[in-house]
Length: 110
Image (cartoon, rainbow, N blue to C red):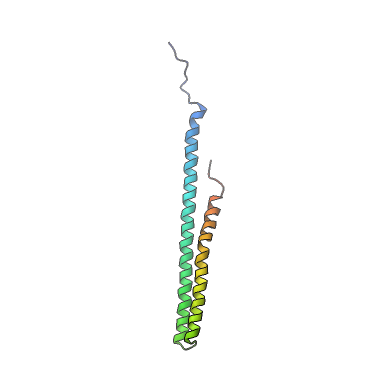
């Protein structure tokens, strides 16, 4: 007795693999965006630390050279520290903005 079944794949058989591929692509996009955001935060932290070290070093040299007194040194170092802390406080929102911009780009679905 012959079977009425066909060996051709039905159109619904391709849908689960296409959905799985789309999930994989979306996961990769999110991971790449997260890595980029972390990288931008680390770079921002390094730049802020370098600016603080440079400012404190400059103030110490001014004090050693006799250009400023101890009171001015403390005020200027405190001011540089204040700027540094503001820069550090801005890093999380900058990293989140970087992440959002990367994730909101056009999807890479074919």
